[in-house]
Amino acid sequence: MAATPAWPPRSTPRLFVDAALAEGPRRIDGPPAHYLLSVMRLKVGDAVKLFDDRSGEWLAVVEATGKRDLHVQLTTLLRPREPVPDMWLCAAPLKKGRVDWVAEKACELGVARLVPVLTRRAVVDKPNTDRLRAHMIEAAEQCDRTALPVLADPVKLATLLRDWPADRALFFADEAGGEPAAAAMRARPGPAAILIGPEGGFADAEREAIRALPRAVGVSLGPRILRADTAAAAAVAIWMSVAGDW
Ligand code: SAM
Image (cartoon, rainbow, N blue to C red; front, side, top):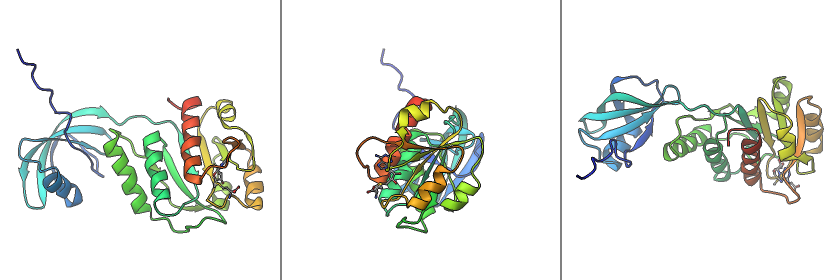
Protein backbone atom coordinates (compact mmCIF):
# COMPACT_ATOMS: atom_id res chain seq x y z
CA MET A 1 0.00 0.00 0.00
CA ALA A 2 1.48 3.42 -0.99
CA ALA A 3 2.59 5.46 2.04
CA THR A 4 0.36 8.47 2.72
CA PRO A 5 2.29 11.62 1.76
CA ALA A 6 3.57 13.61 4.76
CA TRP A 7 1.55 16.72 5.64
CA PRO A 8 2.54 19.48 5.38
CA PRO A 9 4.78 18.64 2.40
CA ARG A 10 8.49 19.39 2.82
CA SER A 11 8.15 22.08 0.16
CA THR A 12 5.71 24.07 2.32
CA PRO A 13 6.80 27.72 2.22
CA ARG A 14 7.96 29.34 5.47
CA LEU A 15 7.37 32.97 6.21
CA PHE A 16 8.23 35.35 9.05
CA VAL A 17 5.30 37.42 10.33
CA ASP A 18 6.29 40.35 12.54
CA ALA A 19 3.29 40.09 14.85
CA ALA A 20 2.31 37.67 17.62
CA LEU A 21 0.68 34.58 16.08
CA ALA A 22 -2.07 32.44 17.64
CA GLU A 23 -4.49 29.72 16.57
CA GLY A 24 -7.30 31.05 14.38
CA PRO A 25 -7.80 33.26 11.32
CA ARG A 26 -5.13 35.68 10.12
CA ARG A 27 -5.07 38.09 7.16
CA ILE A 28 -1.74 38.45 5.37
CA ASP A 29 -1.07 41.44 3.16
CA GLY A 30 1.89 43.50 1.91
CA PRO A 31 5.15 41.90 0.71
CA PRO A 32 4.51 38.57 2.49
CA ALA A 33 1.18 38.27 0.63
CA HIS A 34 2.88 39.11 -2.68
CA TYR A 35 5.46 36.38 -2.06
CA LEU A 36 2.84 33.74 -1.20
CA LEU A 37 0.41 34.69 -3.99
CA SER A 38 2.73 35.65 -6.88
CA VAL A 39 5.97 33.78 -6.18
CA MET A 40 4.74 30.66 -4.39
CA ARG A 41 1.32 30.79 -6.18
CA LEU A 42 -0.51 29.49 -3.13
CA LYS A 43 -4.15 28.52 -3.60
CA VAL A 44 -7.03 27.79 -1.24
CA GLY A 45 -6.24 24.64 0.73
CA ASP A 46 -2.46 25.00 0.44
CA ALA A 47 -0.32 24.92 3.59
CA VAL A 48 2.12 27.58 4.77
CA LYS A 49 4.36 27.72 7.86
CA LEU A 50 4.42 31.03 9.71
CA PHE A 51 6.80 32.01 12.52
CA ASP A 52 6.86 35.18 14.59
CA ASP A 53 10.10 35.09 16.67
CA ARG A 54 7.77 35.07 19.69
CA SER A 55 5.53 32.00 20.00
CA GLY A 56 7.20 29.71 17.45
CA GLU A 57 6.25 28.19 14.10
CA TRP A 58 2.64 27.58 13.12
CA LEU A 59 0.99 25.51 10.41
CA ALA A 60 -1.61 27.52 8.49
CA VAL A 61 -3.98 26.64 5.64
CA VAL A 62 -5.01 29.13 2.96
CA GLU A 63 -8.77 29.85 3.18
CA ALA A 64 -9.17 32.68 0.68
CA THR A 65 -6.95 34.58 -1.71
CA GLY A 66 -7.33 38.11 -3.09
CA LYS A 67 -5.29 40.30 -5.44
CA ARG A 68 -3.10 41.67 -2.65
CA ASP A 69 -3.97 39.65 0.43
CA LEU A 70 -4.90 36.21 1.63
CA HIS A 71 -6.73 34.75 4.59
CA VAL A 72 -5.26 31.76 6.41
CA GLN A 73 -6.33 29.69 9.36
CA LEU A 74 -3.55 28.92 11.86
CA THR A 75 -4.26 25.38 13.00
CA THR A 76 -1.21 23.94 14.80
CA LEU A 77 1.81 25.18 16.73
CA LEU A 78 4.49 23.03 15.09
CA ARG A 79 7.43 24.21 17.22
CA PRO A 80 7.93 26.71 20.04
CA ARG A 81 10.49 29.48 19.51
CA GLU A 82 13.89 27.88 19.84
CA PRO A 83 16.30 28.88 22.64
CA VAL A 84 19.55 30.52 21.51
CA PRO A 85 22.72 30.95 23.62
CA ASP A 86 23.13 34.30 25.37
CA MET A 87 25.78 35.69 23.04
CA TRP A 88 26.00 39.14 21.47
CA LEU A 89 27.99 39.97 18.35
CA CYS A 90 29.23 43.56 18.53
CA ALA A 91 30.76 44.55 15.22
CA ALA A 92 31.78 47.70 13.42
CA PRO A 93 29.51 48.17 10.38
CA LEU A 94 31.25 47.25 7.13
CA LYS A 95 30.65 48.19 3.52
CA LYS A 96 27.28 47.16 2.03
CA GLY A 97 27.36 43.52 1.05
CA ARG A 98 29.88 42.50 3.68
CA VAL A 99 27.81 43.87 6.58
CA ASP A 100 24.76 42.13 5.08
CA TRP A 101 26.71 38.88 5.08
CA VAL A 102 27.63 39.38 8.77
CA ALA A 103 23.94 39.93 9.64
CA GLU A 104 22.93 36.79 7.74
CA LYS A 105 25.66 34.64 9.39
CA ALA A 106 24.88 36.06 12.85
CA CYS A 107 21.33 34.77 12.41
CA GLU A 108 22.37 31.36 11.04
CA LEU A 109 25.01 30.83 13.73
CA GLY A 110 22.54 31.52 16.57
CA VAL A 111 23.64 34.95 17.81
CA ALA A 112 21.09 36.40 20.27
CA ARG A 113 21.86 40.08 19.60
CA LEU A 114 23.71 41.94 16.85
CA VAL A 115 25.10 45.31 17.91
CA PRO A 116 26.53 47.66 15.24
CA VAL A 117 29.43 49.48 16.99
CA LEU A 118 30.67 52.80 15.57
CA THR A 119 34.46 52.89 15.89
CA ARG A 120 36.96 55.53 14.76
CA ARG A 121 37.92 53.73 11.54
CA ALA A 122 34.48 52.34 10.66
CA VAL A 123 33.76 53.16 7.01
CA VAL A 124 30.02 53.30 7.66
CA ASP A 125 28.48 55.46 10.37
CA LYS A 126 24.80 54.90 9.56
CA PRO A 127 24.24 51.23 8.79
CA ASN A 128 20.94 50.49 7.08
CA THR A 129 19.35 48.49 9.89
CA ASP A 130 16.18 47.77 7.89
CA ARG A 131 18.31 46.04 5.25
CA LEU A 132 20.28 44.14 7.89
CA ARG A 133 17.04 42.91 9.49
CA ALA A 134 15.70 41.85 6.10
CA HIS A 135 18.83 39.72 5.56
CA MET A 136 18.40 38.13 9.00
CA ILE A 137 14.73 37.34 8.29
CA GLU A 138 15.61 35.79 4.92
CA ALA A 139 18.29 33.63 6.56
CA ALA A 140 15.81 32.51 9.24
CA GLU A 141 13.17 31.63 6.62
CA GLN A 142 15.66 29.60 4.62
CA CYS A 143 17.40 27.89 7.56
CA ASP A 144 14.28 26.66 9.35
CA ARG A 145 14.93 29.00 12.29
CA THR A 146 12.22 30.18 14.68
CA ALA A 147 14.36 32.82 16.42
CA LEU A 148 15.92 36.02 15.08
CA PRO A 149 18.77 37.97 16.66
CA VAL A 150 17.72 41.24 18.26
CA LEU A 151 19.18 44.00 16.05
CA ALA A 152 20.34 46.77 18.40
CA ASP A 153 20.56 50.42 17.41
CA PRO A 154 24.06 51.46 16.28
CA VAL A 155 26.12 52.61 19.27
CA LYS A 156 29.45 54.44 19.63
CA LEU A 157 32.25 52.28 21.07
CA ALA A 158 32.72 54.64 24.04
CA THR A 159 29.01 54.39 24.93
CA LEU A 160 29.03 50.61 24.56
CA LEU A 161 31.96 50.36 26.98
CA ARG A 162 30.47 52.90 29.43
CA ASP A 163 27.22 50.94 29.67
CA TRP A 164 28.75 47.48 29.55
CA PRO A 165 26.78 44.96 31.72
CA ALA A 166 28.90 43.73 34.63
CA ASP A 167 27.76 40.10 34.16
CA ARG A 168 28.81 39.76 30.52
CA ALA A 169 32.24 38.71 29.26
CA LEU A 170 33.54 40.71 26.29
CA PHE A 171 35.82 38.74 23.94
CA PHE A 172 37.58 41.46 22.02
CA ALA A 173 39.04 40.10 18.78
CA ASP A 174 42.33 41.93 18.77
CA GLU A 175 44.36 41.69 15.58
CA ALA A 176 47.31 42.87 17.65
CA GLY A 177 47.12 39.61 19.59
CA GLY A 178 45.53 38.11 22.67
CA GLU A 179 44.70 34.83 24.37
CA PRO A 180 43.86 31.98 21.97
CA ALA A 181 40.12 32.47 21.43
CA ALA A 182 38.90 28.93 22.19
CA ALA A 183 40.78 28.69 25.51
CA ALA A 184 39.70 32.19 26.60
CA MET A 185 36.06 31.51 25.76
CA ARG A 186 36.01 28.06 27.36
CA ALA A 187 37.45 29.55 30.57
CA ARG A 188 34.72 32.18 30.84
CA PRO A 189 31.27 30.53 30.67
CA GLY A 190 28.08 32.59 30.99
CA PRO A 191 26.61 35.59 29.12
CA ALA A 192 29.12 36.66 26.48
CA ALA A 193 29.83 39.07 23.65
CA ILE A 194 32.32 39.20 20.84
CA LEU A 195 33.69 42.52 19.55
CA ILE A 196 35.01 42.77 16.00
CA GLY A 197 36.67 45.86 14.55
CA PRO A 198 36.26 47.52 11.14
CA GLU A 199 38.33 46.86 8.03
CA GLY A 200 40.87 49.36 9.35
CA GLY A 201 41.12 47.74 12.77
CA PHE A 202 40.95 49.40 16.16
CA ALA A 203 42.86 52.60 16.99
CA ASP A 204 45.38 52.26 19.84
CA ALA A 205 43.27 54.47 22.15
CA GLU A 206 40.25 52.26 21.42
CA ARG A 207 42.26 49.13 22.17
CA GLU A 208 43.31 50.61 25.52
CA ALA A 209 39.76 51.63 26.43
CA ILE A 210 38.43 48.17 25.58
CA ARG A 211 41.14 46.37 27.52
CA ALA A 212 40.44 48.63 30.53
CA LEU A 213 36.98 47.08 30.84
CA PRO A 214 37.05 44.54 33.72
CA ARG A 215 35.11 41.91 31.76
CA ALA A 216 37.05 42.39 28.49
CA VAL A 217 39.67 39.92 27.29
CA GLY A 218 41.67 40.33 24.09
CA VAL A 219 41.53 37.16 22.00
CA SER A 220 43.52 36.07 18.99
CA LEU A 221 41.88 34.40 15.98
CA GLY A 222 45.18 32.89 14.91
CA PRO A 223 48.37 34.11 13.24
CA ARG A 224 46.72 35.41 10.07
CA ILE A 225 44.82 38.68 9.73
CA LEU A 226 41.21 37.93 8.75
CA ARG A 227 38.82 40.28 7.01
CA ALA A 228 36.34 41.68 9.51
CA ASP A 229 33.43 39.64 8.19
CA THR A 230 35.49 36.45 8.25
CA ALA A 231 36.65 37.28 11.79
CA ALA A 232 33.06 37.75 12.95
CA ALA A 233 31.91 34.37 11.63
CA ALA A 234 35.05 32.59 12.86
CA ALA A 235 34.85 34.04 16.38
CA VAL A 236 31.14 33.21 16.74
CA ALA A 237 31.74 29.66 15.50
CA ILE A 238 34.54 29.16 18.05
CA TRP A 239 32.35 30.48 20.88
CA MET A 240 29.37 28.36 19.82
CA SER A 241 31.52 25.24 19.83
CA VAL A 242 33.28 25.78 23.20
CA ALA A 243 30.69 27.79 25.16
CA GLY A 244 27.49 27.75 23.12
CA ASP A 245 25.17 24.92 22.08
CA TRP A 246 27.02 23.21 19.24
N1 SAM B 1 43.68 46.81 9.60
C1 SAM B 1 44.05 45.77 10.57
C2 SAM B 1 45.46 45.34 10.35
O1 SAM B 1 45.88 45.35 9.18
O2 SAM B 1 46.03 44.92 11.34
C3 SAM B 1 43.15 44.55 10.40
C4 SAM B 1 41.76 44.71 10.87
S1 SAM B 1 40.89 43.25 10.52
C5 SAM B 1 40.70 43.37 8.83
C6 SAM B 1 39.28 43.61 11.14
C7 SAM B 1 38.98 43.06 12.51
O3 SAM B 1 38.94 41.64 12.45
C8 SAM B 1 39.97 43.38 13.58
O4 SAM B 1 39.76 44.65 14.15
C9 SAM B 1 39.72 42.26 14.58
O5 SAM B 1 38.59 42.56 15.37
C10 SAM B 1 39.42 41.10 13.68
N2 SAM B 1 40.57 40.25 13.37
C11 SAM B 1 41.08 39.98 12.15
N3 SAM B 1 42.08 39.09 12.23
C12 SAM B 1 42.23 38.79 13.56
C13 SAM B 1 43.10 37.93 14.29
N4 SAM B 1 44.04 37.18 13.68
N5 SAM B 1 42.98 37.86 15.64
C14 SAM B 1 42.04 38.62 16.27
N6 SAM B 1 41.17 39.45 15.63
C15 SAM B 1 41.27 39.54 14.28
